[in-house]
Length: 229
Image 1 (cartoon, rainbow, N blue to C red):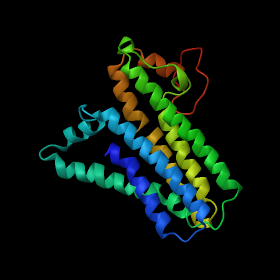
Image 2 (cartoon, rainbow, N blue to C red; image 1 turned 135 degrees about the vertical axis):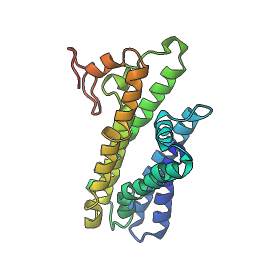
Image 3 (cartoon, one colour; image 1 turned 180 degrees about the horizontal axis):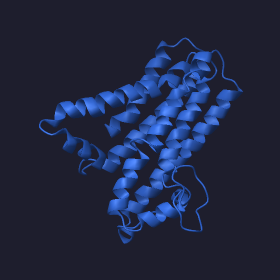
């Protein structure tokens, strides 16, 4: 599911680009930004998860299912995420019906670029750290991870706020503000950050101290005094 998550958005963007009747510029830019984000995320997650046990989040859902977990997983994971994908992608669809590519759209591209940078660089830094046997069992607290415990989640949220700004060229697109809000909430308060940190706190020595000095979502300078963020 993690691998096809980004690819699903890419498919939505390409199909909408073909069907929409908006100006060519917003259609091509919106599609390109969504496809670049989706394909990079899919490749990264596939390489990260390849030949590894089931993600602990999905394993926990399977354990709670009991009996035959397949119908439960189909509804709880695949159908739910398909619904979330459709809802979150509404700005991507709406942006492609815009008649022009204005200043707000350029602001959206800039916000997308910041988010994409945080997500891609953060993922790369974590991959390099995880491959280093000398840091096995330690906590990554350098690079972007010095300023936020989740540069990937923050970047993901910023990407979707950028795409939302592209959609604001139309009133219908601007009305879809709940889509980036839903994505941000999922990452910061839903199945993203909380479940990840619950797992790391119980399995990684030193993570509690890292939590005490490092911002939980938005990039901020690390705290000098110990205290939960």
